[in-house]
Image (cartoon, rainbow, N blue to C red; front, side, top):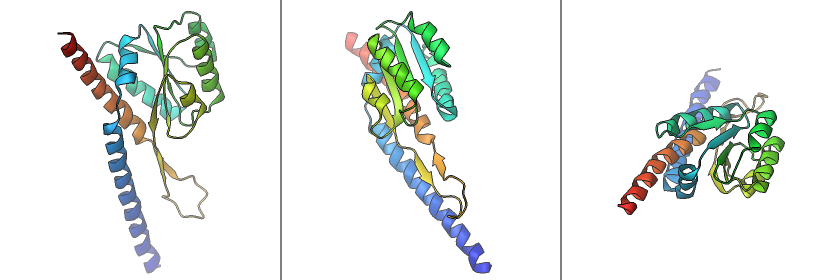
Length: 190
């Protein structure tokens, strides 16, 4: 029993080290990314809409709405098929849609994306870094790389812990780089 108790903290320390390494690598990748295309789209849009395909994605959408609110950019959240159908009647190429999806393969999201393409409405996808339908359809795609960490014993049937922090890092860095993009645009016009 004593050996088993001593082994557990070592395993947890390894997971914490892995998590720390993951955060460090993710931060470096996100800070190096160029957000100019996404920033241009949101800056030039008359209206901005967002659709989130799940719970965590909805939290990301709320944070994105909060961040851009500081710049007087209102992002309207679309909650389902009926709302999308209603708003799609008034969408134009001057509007922007943002999708936050983990897999980029949710049938509803892919259906919305295809309809937006037919209407020539630009859209940004925020998805997990892998080949997915939503990213292939989008005007600009922003990728994240969530990671899984085994916090439970192998024989435990719980799913591994998945860090969703990269989504929040990405939108926060995007917002800061958006502010830099706006400043650069103003300096170039002066």
